Amino acid sequence: MVSLVVLLAVWQLASVAFTARYVPGPWLTFSAMWEHLSSGEIPRHFAFTMTRMLGSFAIAMAVGTVLGTLMGLYRRGEQMLDMWVMVGLTIPSLCYIIVSFMWLGLNDRGAVLAIAWTTFPSIAINIWQGVKAIDQRLIDMARVFRSSGMRRIVKVVIPQVLPYLMAAARFGLGVVWKVTVFVEVLGGSDGVGYMLNYSFQMFNMADVFAWTIFFTIIMLGIELLILKPIETRLFSWRPDIRA
Amino acid sequence: MADIALQALSKVYRSKVQPEGLLALNRVSLAVADHQFVCLLGPSGCGKSTVLNVLSGLDQEYDGEVRVAGAVVSHDSTHPIRLGYVFQEPRLLPWLTVRGNIEFALESVGIPKGQWRERINGWLDRVGLHDFAEVHPHELSGGMQQRTSIARAFAVDPEILLMDEPFSGLDELTARSMRELLLGIWLETRKTVVFVTHNCFEACFLADRIIVFTPRPGSIKQEFTVELDRPRNYEDPRLFDMSVKVTHFVTGGRE
Ligand SMILES: Nc1ncnc2c1ncn2[C@@H]1O[C@H](COP(=O)(O)OP(=O)(O)OP(=O)(O)O)[C@@H](O)[C@H]1O
Ligand SMILES: [Mg+2]
Image (cartoon, rainbow over all chains, first blue to last red; front, side, top):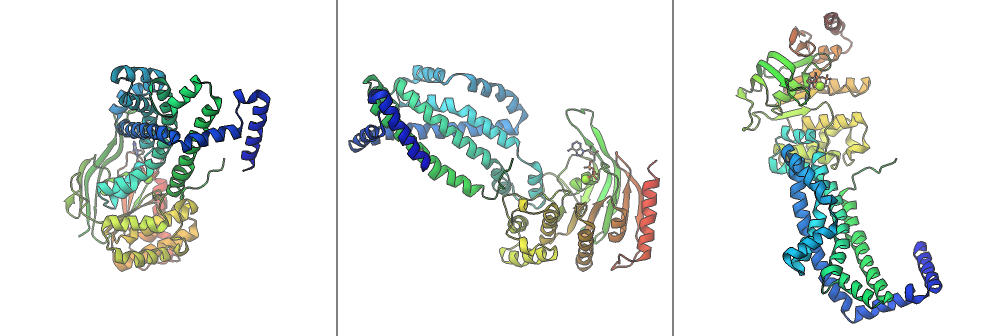
């Protein structure tokens, strides 16, 4: 709370020092935000952005989980995919975006492909680590007690992979929201990224701040109100780590 | 009939580092009758845990024949016998409480839910963990985790009990009371027990028969029959004599 007050104060000072043209103060920014909120502009573009984000996040999670699992389970899969996932991670996301747009056109399908493509390698790597870290001895324990294959998966394997799955999801979401805005700047006709670019063209700094801060607040909200509580619930059994 | 028959059991571990393989067990033949309490005694690395893994059906890549209750232990069929296995490590699911861990085994084995509470509380009482039912494994000491694993193995009411150095991580006082507990239960229920240890005194106190293994590759070097009456007593001088005899053999035979 204190840090928030300090932040606002510093922001206001910076605005005075550099003039509102370059650093619009909190008042200006939030009134711009309010204006676009009440005009329905923010909700509308935000809905476009969220749809793209969630669609490509779902695709990236699905592809990343399948690949990561294959890599973790089979040595052949690991040998085949290891290299390519590294290559996939190395290629700049801009290349995926351009290629996707050239294949599918400057439309939603191209955007979703670009975002998912950029995101899935890091998800695959997280899941791969998780699958490799599975403790076979616990599975053996379950087998001795005649646990069925299904129960072993649900009660012994998945709980072990879950922390990695959560990490993959959070990390993936972070990548997705950055890339989505980027994609919209490059080839969108709507969405938060498009509006940011539009404000930039108009050199309307207050709008740039307004869109950015609104988006950040929402993403923080998702993190703090959805992901964090899930994680706390799932992993409450874990001991605190002291270094 | 929960009997066990090993016929010329050999086990080779293959790995990338040793493509030609490492011979862990060399033609072990052993018959354990129903209701018998047998101890496997031998130095570290001689293949005792390997024998239990084969018996439990976890390890099915071996040479020779393994029959449990007359049936060949094989890939495609479930194990012919309801087993209780106390592993060398506790092997508890860290995200479940002590109660949750035992429930997992009870549910897997197919014990009706109505019996869980009574069974779990009963066994936790006996291993001295009644106050820790709702606690997660990482909040327990190593010995307490091991006792949880023992309670889990007993709670499923096994026909054959496999125990891999279950008391070696406990202090001597706790180990003693656990041995007495084990013998008490065994006298009541007369399960077939295969118990791995490197402690000669423990073997003499518990077993009907002691099978002494050679160092790796493990094979049977000697068998002792323990003729002491039950219930056994720690102060029994014949137990002490027997233990001296076995210890002498085990240490003397090592050169
Ligand atoms: N998974 C494995 N892969 C390769 N070699 C193994 C494996 N498990 C055991 N071995 C080898 O087999 C031999 C027997 O191992 P095992 O665990 O059965 O010994 P043990 O008699 O139980 O020893 P300890 O008393 O130390 O527990 C060991 O020498 C070890 O090198
Ligand atoms: Mg062992």
